[in-house]
Length: 338
Image (cartoon, rainbow, N blue to C red; front, side):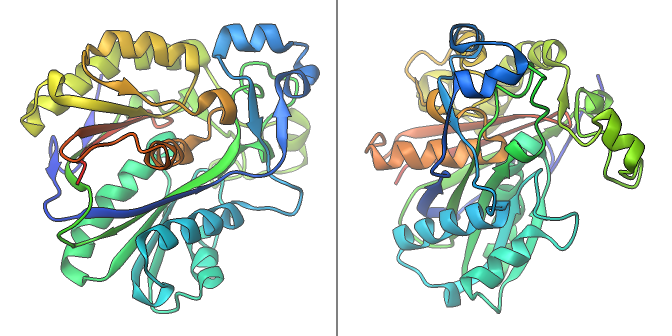
């Protein structure tokens, strides 16, 4: 299997700290029975297959930038900063408002952060850690504070009769404020992986330059999210344990040093199986998948913010963030809580 990593096998992120977190999910709660009805599956089937009981779907007038803006404001409030102090806004999303301009430009406008650089990152469910890595080196050079936001509105691209996908996904956004400060959790190490040979396992077939969306594509449902669930699960089960082991070795820590594990919230049943294989004997795995479903790039920052609000972390504890999904991609970040 061909693998590409950047930068190098792993990258140290000295002196970049998370000084605030925030999250936002839409008000509309969608039950398993509601989500599963068009696909002819019920609550019992969905719960058994996914451990998801409900998810949030955006209101008709809400777009990804709206969710991202709300999460960003919550993170900025947590960090105690204003929009004028931001030097960068990065939105990790695979469901942008439009193909262009970047969704981050709308977030910048919404926040009134006129002097910031703003751009999007699309690494699907691994996107937030990819964005975290991209921001770190720039913040060290430019100073100021950066917003890293994961935001998705998957409800817009789900095919209602497709039981493989429609029951899994929810909408939401999570955000982190990062800065070169001396207080707060420090991002110690990051690693990014892409397995492009498997890029067709997760896709939206039409709507890009390869296959522009036309009437024939609409009739064929090519505007919808599609996933080979069996092969995706195989990738995660076979690749994630060895990638995590390698990442911890590169970071200079042992599996027994990890106190908290925050994975991408892909599927609750799969997470339980994978966590057992990771052999992190002292770690607590944090989950939001039961109530929010799979929120793509938003799932890690949403779950991180939930753990922060619960007071789950103690100074000195190590937190492992793990993203995996379309691309196929995998990403890891080691955070030492401050």
